[in-house]
Image 1 (cartoon, rainbow, N blue to C red):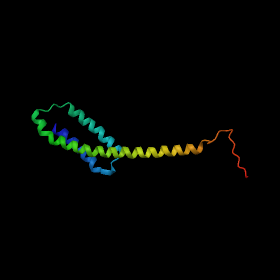
Image 2: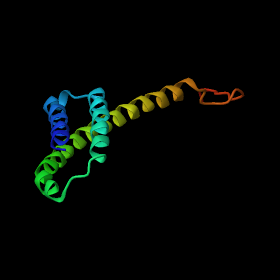
Image 3: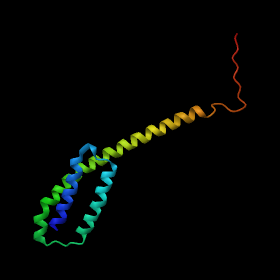
Image 4: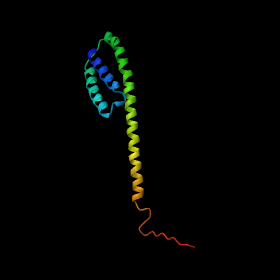
Length: 112
């Protein structure tokens, strides 16, 4: 069990060490490997003394998860902002492309 927890700590540390350069692909690869590690952990049943012994490792993993989650939130917010910019551009373009008046509309400019 300790080796599995250490593997999870190593995965998290690797992702955190990439810092701002970590992108969606890196996080996706991390999440896939993390799922495999958690599947392995679910098959293990630790004794009560092991639970106490591994608590610091689990707390360390939880601390790293907070950092990773904040990075994921930042990437999500950035993506949402960019999508909104694209949608705003599409709305602006369609406003210029669509006729503002109907086909039978006529505009007269007369001098008085």
